[in-house]
Image 1 (cartoon, rainbow over the protein chains, first blue to last red):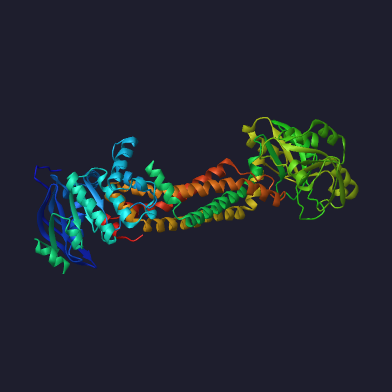
Image 2 (cartoon, rainbow over the protein chains, first blue to last red):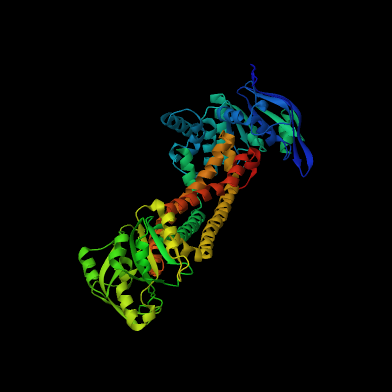
Length: 239
Length: 385
């Protein structure tokens, strides 16, 4: 494990990734290099198949690049063995998925508590953390409800509570509003903005939605595995 | 706690599917236990055999009797404590379907050698006094409603003619495995009647039951007894009571093997059903397993979830199946009458049932658990449950 001090939370260096499909190698990401500063809110945009979810997966440590290195808070996660990587994810990353990915057999409270069971916190401490997280997303009253008893927006807010309950440095969100109506989407984006503004969480969000992207401080545009950036890209992505 | 909560709630997630799987397991474990119990019943005679009892029979076949005077020669063999005579009577009570074993025995000697047959003293005395008296076991009495004082008519087959007995005693077994489905009457009554009816068949004995002082000398004493009658008109074969009983089992060994095979086939069938259930379950939950792994849970945790759920379902089916085996075996025993004298669910059968259920639970979870543990997170997250 190599560590070094950097103003950037994420440092991506010469990362490439390809997939094998039907015996053919399909390149997805080409020699990408960029930084994400601590406390930043980065939007990743691009057409379908451009590699933005793949890039997000690499940043979150749930997939490995073919080449290059990714340092998160000084830790080169491309060199971590799977067991260490799992521990690292538990401690350093909060996940928000498009389809929420809550455990349907657990209540909202239990879903938020789930990642805390990997920590040495006592039961009482866990309950306090969960109560605080649910309070932050405004779902204290729904703590004992199962996901099937919650609306899409509420489920995504539970997922956000689950993502922040371990107090991770990085929150990755893959199309967090992709399955929501406009009002719910606005609430979720407002929450992510609040986590970024008030709690200093670094957020990387993949989105197709221009309104969602407007909440980000910076936008990177991926097309055919190549990266570019700039305000005009927002317009390009919409087109 | 979260781990067990997840297992319990996942197991109950598809109640119909889980219920049907548990029902299948209950039937399989019950069938397995019942078939093993029937196999055990086959060996009940051998299992109840005492190490200090030998049986001497005609060396050619059990069908051929031996002269009564052999008794004194056997008694004179060193190491022999007692000798009893016994003849298989084979009579019919009302209807051939109402079969139960009947033996003519010299009661005074015979019951001294079988302390596992427990009598009320007054009933035993009454039996010994009555030449036409009979003793029936508790199970036999309950099957046909015999009570002390009842007349018990039999139609002879091996020993022709009509025979009438009076039930003078009902014996109980010292242990649950003791056979109480038999009837005994006085050998002297049989012999004296045969003297009148078919004189050439009098003074003939089916088997001699020999009690020895030292079970360790069984082989030596058996050889000594048989040596007495070598080159005679009725050579003998003496063996331990257990070997004698196993000889009967050997005659029907193919059936026993068949029952055993079927009992294991039943387990394999439910294993296939259970494995299919768990495979479906794991396939449906790939995205959940991937989410857990993304959150930092180890592959072993995910595999343990699958294994735990499989074991919980298997244990539920196994325990209910075991609980059902006892009343069903008891009911089966009443339906088969005296066909199986001792139909008892043994501790080893129960252990085998539990072991089979848990083995099914583990085996059914192996491949789905491996798949769940090894699923790539990015692939699992794309999976649609």
